[in-house]
Length: 325
Ligand code: GLV
Image (cartoon, rainbow, N blue to C red; front, side, top):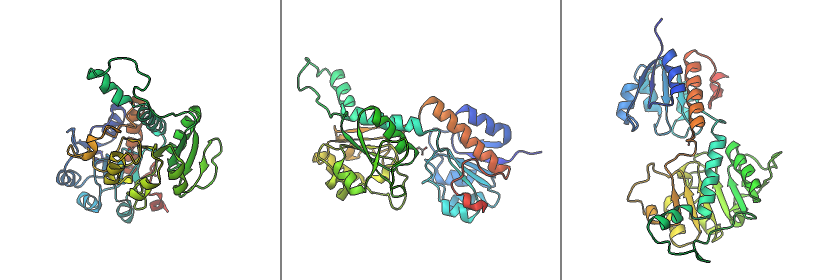
């Protein structure tokens, strides 16, 4: 019996790759860079399954290019703003994602950025390497206090809650804003507030909301104007939740103290972006979930979703499960 044909838009870790190759006739895009839209549309033609990465824009055009055989889209990410879910749902194509397994890695990374920005780790490293360090000094590289500070978490799902638990160990007060959750969460020491209060009261703000029409540029000039001058902003969610030109102005004019971003509106951030000039900004290349075991488990989960869809079974993690109703 012939195996179902699938297109995999990049090589993922071996565990998942082996599962896919065992069950499918897999066409794998081996380049380090994502396939162009044209290549994607060509390679997906006639396939029954598509395994995509967050760098692939899977819209109605790509689904139509695949044709009526397409049975499943499995996204190798927890976020799925790169996929037109409504278009998939209209075509009754289930879309899978990889929730849960990357919660700890992402929360660890958000906390890494928070600590690094507060204590100026990247600046300090550069200072030492470039020979500027002459002696120990009482005012050398003073940074923000973490113990006793207030952390505001925007988006209080799994990852936001995991960040709150880490903050408790650092003796921080935690506020959260989540339009879908306005009550205390058992076992998590954090208080629900509205967005204005969070922006006004937080020393650190960490973003953990998905990118939607409502959250695009949620952190804009008006939001920066409400923040404390010592505020430090951390984003490990999606870049477009922050308006980059408002961020530039806020950092440049010291309207807030600093920011640390794992994600930017354009990825990679263009090398002529004015943000790259700023010393009070840490930038990372979207690596919050990039730990060995997390990426291995993501590959397995993405493979499981893909294979379930090809078999006509319900995906273990489906973002549009209403198609099964
Ligand atoms: C990473 O950003 C993910 O959504 O998995």
